[in-house]
Length: 83
Ligand SMILES: [Zn+2]
Image 1 (tube, rainbow, N blue to C red):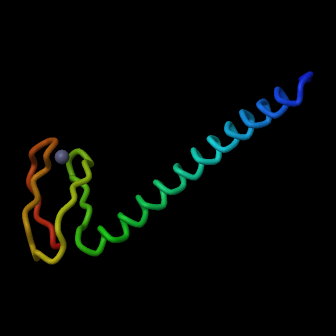
Image 2: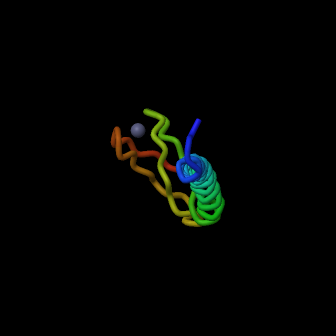
């Protein structure tokens, strides 16, 4: 317990700012997640994600190019996909 009002006040402020930081952290986490999802939705209109048949590496390719050969950057295997 605090003996002076000013101490009480300061404690209250520090506790509040800690709460605020916690809130901001959650808020930031949520916003970055939300932005990521939004970016992914926007991206899915122009790009497609293919998985390498050999190593499972995800490869992002532009859409609407027809049949293209995709080269895996990891294992350097090439495969044909329609985008
Ligand atoms: Zn691969």
